[in-house]
Length: 376
Image (cartoon, rainbow, N blue to C red; front, top):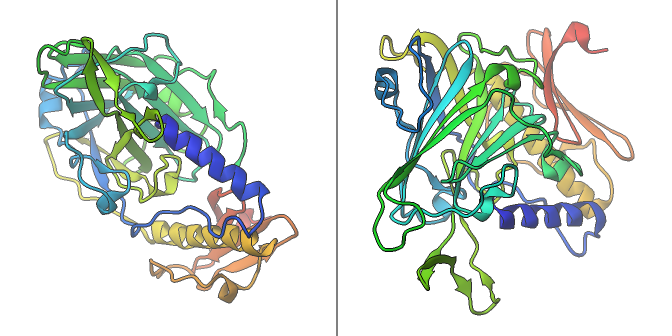
């Protein structure tokens, strides 16, 4: 995620927690309809060499995602350079292959775990169980310099949530350059990123099986940070806004649009559905359950409760007071949900019609599915 995005959101979070309703009136949320992208991730049984080339036959068989769009979706113009990704998996790794069109490839940062989005970069975000907590962020630039983080919860939901000292044990990465890096005298074509993310690392903070089971769906998104640059004295320099004396804001291009300039809204990320079928052998259709609609109903209540707290100083158990126009219809759950509040907390429960399970969301945004027998 780019610096201005993080700074903006940290500031918004501070306002959200500390200042009065006279200054801020609503919680920043997505301004586009809930409609995440989706992708079927097939298995490979051939060795994948991480060299930035992804020229193995199974990579050739794997489909590309749609081209990236602006993080705000149709609210902003389309990116002026294309970006797309492929995915595969085997019993040891979750594989990613990204191609980033770029006529002027540059990078400066060479030390691991520095703030990579100061450069143009490519980023991977993974929330295995889709509860919006305990997710993974990975960033890489054209020098193959990496930054990996474990995020305890989104920045909006807590402080000191990023575990910067955490490293992905067993990670494999490579970058390919079709052109020349840091040479303004020619025109480049693209750079590539290839990543093998070990399941052992992804299994550390989730109840989901790693490697995944047939039909499992994880929440994933990708981001490309692209700074506007110019050539000064033979070097790439970020363009400066003469009105502020600072560089213009970065472009944030993503696979699944989020409708808000903040990558740390995992509920808006895309869906990756895993299959044991080998890539290129059989088409597997994406299968979505009513659970995702149920989770989005609870997420809309979460937004509304946070907004209500800002404007009234407390949460409410009256759904009518929240004035929500629900985007999704839930057929397998009992509407309306039950809201329980205290002075400082709330929880919203949406029970299944078969009375065997329920979804619950808390004031810190954590959403979980539980069996009725485990309710207490």
